Length: 138
Image (cartoon, rainbow, N blue to C red):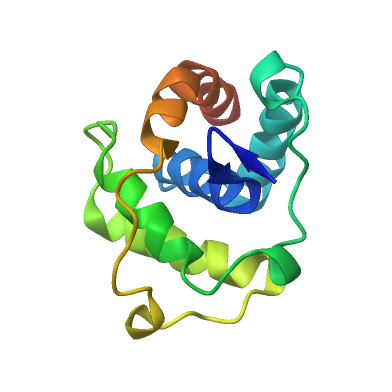
């Protein structure tokens, strides 16, 4: 199943990576992820993504989905306080969360599809995610 032509599992993981990347270092990441999932469930009520369901991560996501998520992240205007180190740390954390097997970058699909519309979709939801993160940090 796709949303705007994007596999739902990929879209979900890009959302989570983006939201986590936007968070401050001191935020409890387990609490953060829980709050992000709440936001995702709220967003499900929007007409465009009513049919989207939380993915069974281990079963539905292809090995290259994190690499594609990172490609989408590069297209976003991330908050200025986000740096590469934060992204790498949270990226590793998200691999460990949900008991994902670490994915080597060499296993990424060599020809990442730059045409999918994840970035545009995330920009629309940026305020919702940032708002949720602000509630978590204060």
